[in-house]
Image (cartoon, rainbow, N blue to C red; front, side, top):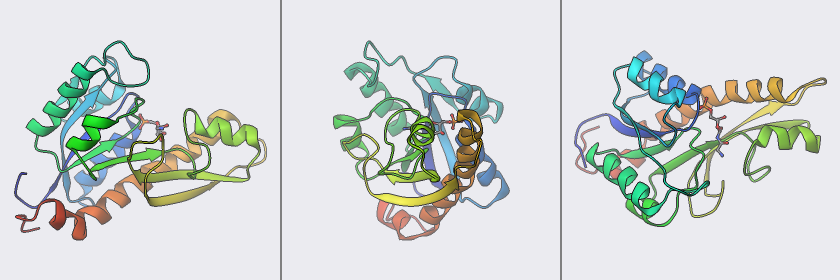
Length: 207
Ligand code: GAR
C-alpha cells in the first residue's frame, strides 16, 4: 500500500461521469484530501474516460468480455491488476453497470464503495428513479454503500433524501437525484479520508 497523506482512488464507471467530475472538483477545491489514481471503464466511449483524460488522469478502457452484467474472468483479472498497479486504497464505483463479485471483492475486501440512485433498500437494480416514479413514492434519494456480494446491498454509509414533485418526469426526477449524488459522494469520501478508516487501511500513513 502506498504511503503518504492522500487517499488514492480508483474510479470505475460506464457512463457520462458526473459523479467522477464532482469527486475531481472536490479534490481540486481542497475539500476532499484524495487523488484519483486511475479511472477504468467497461465502455470504450464512456464519457467518464474523456472527463478523466481532460483532467490529466490516467484512464483506461478494459474490454469486459462476453457477459452482459458481469466481467468475464480475464477482464476481472485485468481490472484487479490495473487497480493494484495504481496502488489504490479505495475502489469507487461511479455508475459502473456491472456486478462485481468473488475475486474482485476479495482483492479489495472492505474497500469497494458504490452510489445508487435510490434510498436503499428500496429500488435496487436498474433505473431506480424510474422504479420510484412508477411506484408513486413521495420521497426517494441516493445511497452510498459498501459493496458486498449482493446487488445494491452492503452496509450503508450515507443517504440523501430527494422529494418526488407533482408533475415530475423520469428526466426531472433523475436530474434531481443526480444533483444530490454530486454532493453526497464527495462528502462521504471526505469523511472517510479524514477518519480512522484511512489509518486502518494504510497503517503506515502519517495522514
Ligand atoms: C449515477 O446516477 C449512479 O447512481 C448510477 O449511475 C449513474 C451514473 O452517472 N448507478 C447505478 O445505478 C448503480 N446501480 P454518472 O456516470 O453521471 O456518474
